[in-house]
Length: 566
Image 1 (tube, rainbow, N blue to C red):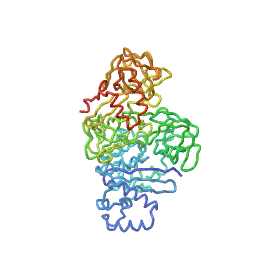
Image 2 (tube, helix red, strand yellow):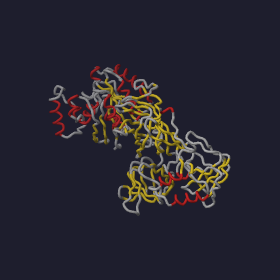
Image 3 (cartoon, one colour):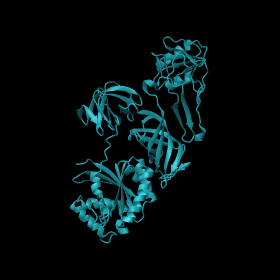
Image 4 (cartoon, helix red, strand yellow):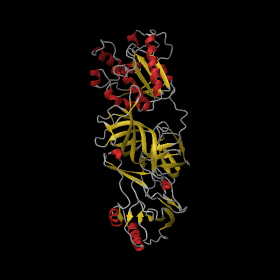
């Protein structure tokens, strides 16, 4: 028996999506006797002249039955002798494009219905483009209502040419085209006597046999962390679903975005110990040492996966209000939820022609290529490489409604994580100074964002950049990094010494800044030692008072305002 197939039906309004699935369920004897009776009675009081209205098996809402259209996504589970299925029957009306996108997000295969009397319409193209955007790789174009065009082979070939043109435009690789009549039943579960010219498979037969497995993905293990499990002080497990590859006890893994490495100590699949876990399994993983991991982090064996601060994305905008540059939102990617802004609309996409159009705003149901700046780097990747790390939604921060869904096309501003984040080292001592981070203010969202624009580590003899967009340091200064208890001496923009606090003495001849680039109000070495002592005795509640006493925040630092966001 073939594996489970999750598929979606979509197309324009009244193309027969619900009728098609209803006919499959009815013909294949996949409904109960009382459902069959109810269907026959409901059909008699409907608008079908007493004939069975198969769409009533899926259109469950009263509003749907009254209007004769699908509004909500209807999920149905059924099983034949050859395979199990989950189908999402989705709305065709443009007003409910959001609902259709939700259905597409779970599917492995899309059945796109085309009315034989009308051919490929704008809404057909929109749905095909959205399915492609959501990563669906397998397609069936069901040319429906062939009975209305007298089962004409010529008409079918005309529509076949339109479908082939659309498939080439969207680079759809696995496409099957089947002529049928959902109402009469031609080529749905049985071959049609009215279309002897078609010698291919029926729709149900094709669904039972199509191979949608991704055998050559080659993805290494990664798991977004859903929850940190702490039933008592002796146990700390990281829970989530294995999205790719496998992991075994004894494997070395990395945690992102911290960049720390650890060894897998144990694996629990449900409540049972296991040596190995595979793709799709929900697991609890424990590691051999303490690491910085919380919900939204990723555990992986893939060295190519990293954290990024900027994403280049393709979006389907579903909000009633328009998308504007500077739009303030929350991004949900994997298990991470984080504030962000849209910094650029590169272009809109014409759903009919695929043409790229310059646009300042995007309206509801529009598709666009945009740049999103995150408030901090998160683990992400291109959708084509890692599906779970490349699909996202945008959430309106005021209404908490989903404003857009989309995929990551490219990743930018790679974050330097963990031990690699050291700004200064002499081979033994390491200091994680943030003196080169840029800070900018977005006037539309009223948020301050920062970015690590320099991703190298400096050592004795190196020249440092003293001027950036949001910082301007003197050529001679000392930097004290409180977290690592390391001091860095800079003369004529070159590093002349990297010292531990025990070795360091401040002579007062040059300005002094902390690891974030803020001026320290110290004139003598005694002042510095007093600052060290007070810092060591400070907790998170008294830190603001200590900072106000010892630091000047605007001497060498400023907030950069980009004209692009005004």
